[in-house]
Amino acid sequence: MPAEINYIISYLPECICLVFCFFYLLPAEKCDEFTDLNLGHSIIGTSLKVRLLLYTRSHGTCGTLVSHTDLSAYPQFNLLNPTTFIIHGYRLTGSPPPWLGNLTQLLLARKDMNVIVVDWNYGAANLNYLEAVKNTREVASNVTAFIQMLQEQGADLSSIHLIGVSLGAHISGFTGANLKGEIGRISALDPAGPEFKGRNPEDRLDPSDAQFVDVVHTDMDLLGFREPLGHIDYYANGGADQPGCPKTIFSGQSYFKCDHQRSVYLFLDSINATCTSRTYPCSSYKDFLDGKCLTCSQFGDAGCPIFGYDVIKWKDILLEQNQTKTYFKTNGKSPYCMTNYRMDVTIWNKDVQWGYLTVKLHGNGKEAQATINHKSLKFKKFTKTELLAAFDKDIQWVEKVSVKFSTGNVLQPKRKLRILRIRLENLEPKENKAQGYAKILPLRNDTQHQMVSLLKHFLYLPAVDLLKCLFFPLTGLCVGTTSFSRRTKRSPSGQFPVKKPTSEGGKKLHNISLHHCMYAERLS
Ligand SMILES: *[C@@H]1O[C@H](CO)[C@@H](O)[C@H](O)[C@H]1NC(C)=O
Ligand SMILES: *[C@@H]1O[C@H](CO)[C@@H](O)[C@H](O)[C@H]1NC(C)=O
Ligand SMILES: *[C@@H]1O[C@H](CO)[C@@H](O)[C@H](O)[C@H]1NC(C)=O
Ligand SMILES: *[C@@H]1O[C@H](CO)[C@@H](O)[C@H](O)[C@H]1NC(C)=O
Ligand SMILES: *[C@@H]1O[C@H](CO)[C@@H](O)[C@H](O)[C@H]1NC(C)=O
Ligand SMILES: *[C@@H]1O[C@H](CO)[C@@H](O)[C@H](O)[C@H]1NC(C)=O
Ligand SMILES: [Ca+2]
Ligand SMILES: [Ca+2]
Image (cartoon, rainbow, N blue to C red; front, side):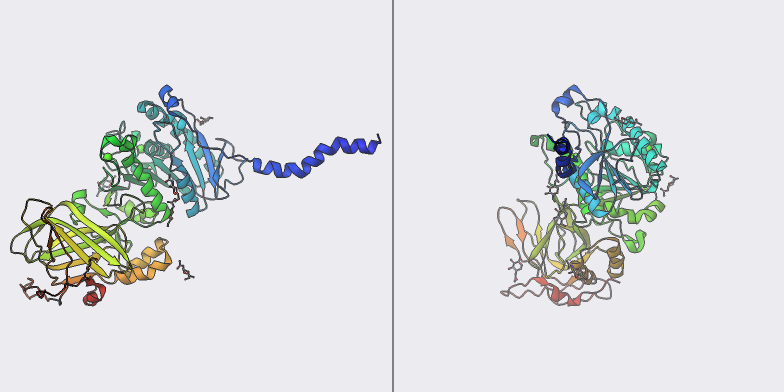
């Protein structure tokens, strides 16, 4: 055989490889996944392993297991970008948290950053919760060492954000304390209560653990923590039980974790900016529901803090105020945000009336509903009853309002609520404030203008006729829509004039619609 041919044959594999392996090697980059364990592991118990999975915009769905000490192999890890750590909690069954992928992707969609998922599933998966608790300090010192390494390589501690869920919230606290409270932010999603309740600040999350600590409570009566732990503490739906979660133990595992896990889903909505939840400082949830805490003057033009990811815009003012507890209501599923109105109702029935209200706003073919039934409401003649009306969605252009009154008591005699006046005022900050707010939040631009023009008005519906009642003998419900007649002026005494409503016998009552609100006054 000629030497040339021999030569070619001997190099043939390399040549083929040059052509094919190039394509073959590229996709060979494999993705590292969160540790997937099962109940078997939890039963035996697992010993701690801390894995760090990196995600960036260029590797958004494909995790890379990174070394704890050397970043040179990961050019996508840009230390000039902020870094966010996601730290999960106790894993009863050892399965990966279902929300992990969405949380990572929404964060990356928001900002060009490095996301590090701290996978300590080995160590968190254990039937014995106490064993998982014991590992929290070590996870924290492990993450601390990694952050110190980042710092040595030029990362800025104030651009570091830890998002900790349940036990992960306290791990974040320990990590922050190890770093002398110099990291930028800790967001704690329903911090774990059991084993941390009543502990000193060194042994749990507290506001000194980071420059800014925001905390949401969703299950403080079972797995969560009741007392405030951050600069701002949100109590979603009061902080104990969440709408849409099972109320009985017959729902199995979700009975135990639904409230707790809701904190994560609320936070996801806030990163996605699906919609925004305004939250109100108050001394108790009851007072909040009673409409006693709806003013936000202490926060100036920004208005009351919103829930979630973007609350960082309120950082300075919240730091001035020490610890702030706020309340808000949510829907039972995403989109979770509600639209809040201050509502006041004045009646002219002779006797005091007790009952519940359902208010509907109609507009643009949509309908939003607020049910005010946290307690039996008291209505007294010529006395304003002030309420919070939280609607399940935002109606940009309100064309019509309808109101339903129910005594909630089947045996009670049927009643009409004779409404003299209903006033509904959208609690979103008014025009000038709304502009400031629009700067803060990426409001979808198609709705922005409409929203601002709605904010100019509040619905002022004086001399509203009585509810036209249809009586259902069995339920005792009084259902009806209100009608609207002419504006009634306040008499000099400040009393509302006693005036028979103008419902003419057989005439159909018409619904309140926005053009009737031409009389709407601007809020001073
Ligand atoms: C962190 O955990 C990993 C794996 O469990 C280990 O290899 C590494 O040495 C730990 N680092 C520190 C500082 O404890
Ligand atoms: C993640 O987001 C997608 C798209 O919005 C949704 O369909 C899916 O249910 C979410 N997954 C979880 C576990 O929430
Ligand atoms: C983000 O919001 C959009 C609507 O704005 C929704 O369609 C999408 O499912 C949301 N994604 C997640 C992961 O929740
Ligand atoms: C604010 O915090 C300081 C120190 O933590 C404390 O001494 C002070 O009483 C707090 N003020 C209020 C109004 O809570
Ligand atoms: C947002 O505004 C831009 C320019 O003002 C416009 O071209 C675009 O269509 C708007 N987007 C939506 C969803 O309305
Ligand atoms: C008022 O609104 C209710 C509920 O949408 C509707 O059923 C009723 O027909 C309306 N009445 C009038 C007079 O438009
Ligand atoms: Ca602490
Ligand atoms: Ca609960």
